[in-house]
Length: 296
Image (cartoon, rainbow, N blue to C red):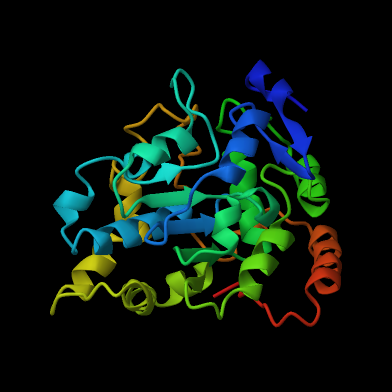
């Protein structure tokens, strides 16, 4: 296993979750105790499950469907990312959060037992995006290979770690099952990535209704076009090309926004790997009612 940066050596397991050097023990403790306001707007996903896509949808609606206003700054700056302490920044995200006016836009990939405790009890609105595990694994595999503070994998090694909950950010199963269990809460909206691919306009309407943000007449088609994967991949405010704050080493062959397809896993999983994963999935997800599309 090769690496791109010696900082990966600071990766470690904390309560069963693999964290990078940018998520210190001190940050994990502080985030658990931070205040979550009832009017906070929070996007939660497992890493590389449609996070940026949903952030753009939420922020466009938040800014009254004013695209110029929404994209006046990078998506990274529009949302407070709870999970990492930006290098060379004097304060952590939990401290920045205290100074932000309400309502705050927040994103996180934290597992249930490491997210702010108040997210379990208050009425802040949460949009959770779940993506089928195989495509999520492939996208996370590529992400690990372009980020300087994460280890670089060969596919077979990554597949093993992903199946055994040892990949970056922890168990795909745990985070999806937790938010699926809360899908009927008034303050939680559970969205599937594949549904965003199949019918983006319907998802946008669901998000607008969830937050109570009406879409002006005639604007929906414009929002769909602006928030399409193709448009976002070209947009420097959403494709991370205008930011160096997260330690991402972009390569021409593997940009931050890569394919956004459903079914790309078939280009990586061998038949044996797919069958092995299907058995794990059946064991962990049996009886939950949570199913995903693996091809469209």
